[in-house]
Length: 503
Ligand code: BG6
Image (cartoon, rainbow, N blue to C red; front, top):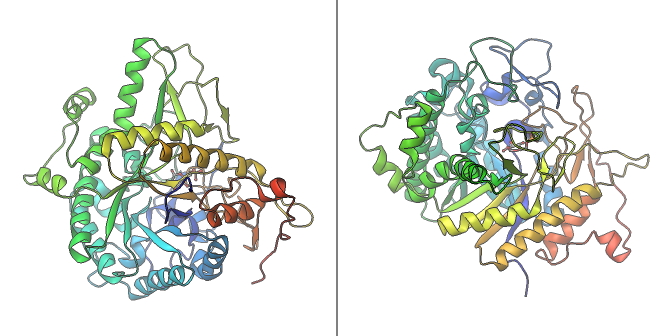
């Protein structure tokens, strides 16, 4: 018997702003990520108030998925993907977010993309908001801090549910909605822009212009918008299933000191349960008022909001998992690296990626069990992967055994969790084809099974090439996760030569 249930959704996940490019083509409006420049691990990205001509913004071309989606989806089909998670760029459908009529070219583009997936036997899983927002809404309303966005979002989502009825049945409302519990969420998650041009997106230091009150209020607006979207999705097509999406944080106490244990519990609550509870239980957790009190936050709720939340519970719970984190109240404990959310302590039992993210497959099993115990609804891992620099050999091959090892170990832990009794629907790894990094804006931080000839400075001819991991994952999909060894090392099979695809 397979370790994974029949119909398990193996596949990959992408975000429109990180792959599509064509940032003003066919009527698309400017979007928040279009004003974020490229950076590196050591040089934070900068946010501008307008486009600075002649400067490099990674989303403008990205990997040109907009024009190449057919050949890219064919590669995913060749690997045997059962599912592809993509997102819709709101500003392709409503360029300013408030247009009287939607942009037909944008609607047609996504319809064609979903049809292409079906031709390849791939089920679309569609995120309605993945770190993007029509820039006009950010400028005019201060993004999600304004309640006005709820109605605009619901209008946009209803249009998507109606237009893509029958083509898409699996939806996610907001990507990593809990990023709004940290300064990181301001720009990417909520379109709350910094007051000055060229502001650094540096999360390793205190963000001076961050306003927690505004962020938590924006999050409340997203909760209400998400709940209304869930309700609309069910009304428009009872076959629709809608999920939330949380950036998971498996939090360990650094020591068994009660202070560390309590801090770990608090962090787990803020990072996972605060949003998970509203989405999956339909209400804020009982400890939320104390959290608001401690933060000096007061949530402005309108009459009826609580009922909307209760009526808009999600059907399944999805999350990204890259790393675990370790916390301590002891300031002398050595700090960890590569943090986006909060300051972690260095976990001495783990290894770290080149971008400083703790590699912890067992943390995934822990998280799956924890969340399933709590919510008792199907779970899905919709992001997981290793961001690494790859080397293209002289013959064009790319030997990314480190990526295979990372994913194999995580898939093994998912199998353990399924054995533990977790109802797990699928696994869409992050970035099946190399795309722009959200955090650093780099191309060098690659996740893909498919290499893209594009570099940090924007150079490259965009050709695609299969990495070794391509053949490994093909085997995983074919065997429903039974065969996890690298096919060449396990059986002496000679891989297909790495093929550069002609354009
Ligand atoms: C998740 C996001 O946080 O992590 C993705 O949903 C992002 O958009 C991914 O790309 C990996 O992060 P990064 O910074 O390595 O691109």
